Image (cartoon, one colour):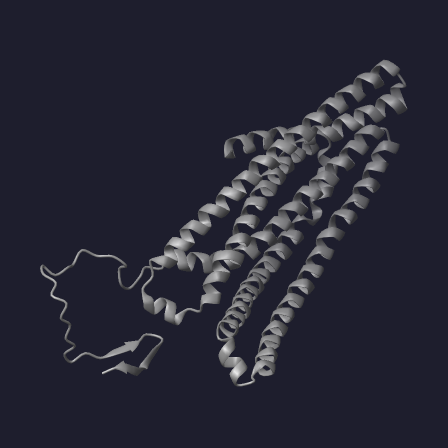
Length: 337
């Protein structure tokens, strides 16, 4: 599925990259040549390439969706197997809600974000490379104008990505804390009810949810500033391209259809770069969930869950002599002495 998805991704990106040039040719045939045969031929090529792009995009999406499902299943299986291998002290120190959150919400977010973003990232990178080649080949002067904002956007994206990853990890931790608190109280509801402590538990749970909301607002504010900047940059670049390109058309060094094709290339390139920025944001979200998931997967149990030691004969007599025991979660409290 991966090879098939990547193959159709290349086809979809190549055909999509070709569309602005074909559109410019249609406009030149209509405005300048005014020849019905040329117009009919240009429209036919545009329709065929558009249809090929649509079909290839659909098949590409199907392949990557299947990959995403298989990744989710494999990831859950590995995390579940890693949990079952841990020693009993691990379950004393780790709340059930935390483990269930890692197994469900974090695995889902990790597989969904990675599976979806690999698809979008590969498509956007291939498309951006193709568009850039066409732009440099057709009009290198306008290409230079287009890339005036790239260094600033790159710096802002790096700063935003680092901050967003920190916030995403905090959100994952707080969600796990909310799940653990709710599961613990629901599991001991008889004790809570016997003490009439429902209102206090409700307030404590609301306090945890308020912290989650505050983190969500921080994410939203950061995303708003970043997307406003990223969205404004290509629009301002388009104005600069039209200004300089319009001058080139007026002096006769550029055809109107070529200018329109280049504007389409520039807008498509901006969309591709914007998609890469969204992928970066999604991967930062997935990184917060992935760190917790990999911590469980990579953890080695302190006591092996299985072994080969066994007595030669078993008589059923057990004697405790000078034995004491503590739980690792409460090492200061002796349980058996």
